[in-house]
Amino acid sequence: MITATSWLLLLFSLPTSRNTERVAVWRRLKKLGAVQIKTSTYLLPDETAQYEQFQWLAQQIRDYGGDSTLVRAQEIEGLTKEKVIAMFNEARAKDYGELRKSLQGFIGRRKKIDAETAAAELERLTRQFREIREVDFFDSARGHDVAMLLRRAEGRSRTRQPAVLDAKQYQSKTWLTRPRPEIDRVGSAWLISKFIDRKPKFVFAPSANAVPGAIPFDVLDAEFSHHGNCCTFETFIKRFAISDKVVAKIGEMIHDADLDDARFQRVEAVGIDRVLKGWAKEGLPDKEILRRGFECFDALYAFLQRR
Image (tube, rainbow, N blue to C red; front, side):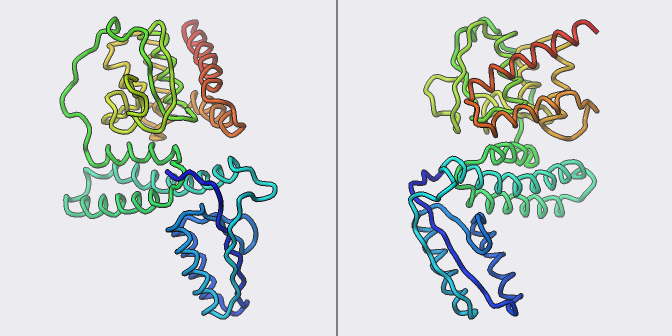
């Protein structure tokens, strides 16, 4: 993950007759992970590797008969640092979104294709993930989601049924999940606070070991995360043997909203997911998103109880 203090701007122009060269430049910019802020103006974090790549591309544009200028900027008028980072993360989210669809398709038909074809396709998808990850400069949340889906595609989930845990051993704990919580993370935190830990503390960090002693959830390779066909919420239900029928229904809703595989044909939580994403885009603090999300799940639970 990059901590950007300045930015690189590549400004260029090419003769209108150079369509082939224009496409070549666009493809190179896409591969570098650059984002467009104006016509023929592209942006990268000011790091040595990115600077060298932009230098090379600027020279290539001049070789094509065009003009190019490479600029370093501490600030960009009209764009805060947070807004620029959001632009990069949105661009990577689109890339991850396309890969996620491909992975879901692969998982759905894996049993119908031969082992050699499956291995080749999985290798290709893994390579695509690594290429996106290389230009995921600000650790997009979508990257973690796709990484967990890739683990599922690789078959690296638990094969044996894990032991049921005693909630009494999980009281007054610190629980860690990724920033900008969405449907599975917010739902899991709500489930923890209502059915597992009476006095939980929630913290946010991009990696499982960022806070010593904290219990990570919905983080890559964590004990409480996606396993097999289960989202994190469903993993908690199984590990703590939560038998509440309403919770089971909510788990189906979260599964379909989070994994987008229509397994249970339940769309009720999709709206909640979009609201959570909207609050994140508005810049609400993670804890405030969690607080508001808890109110949504409290209301949903109350409604389902009375049906």
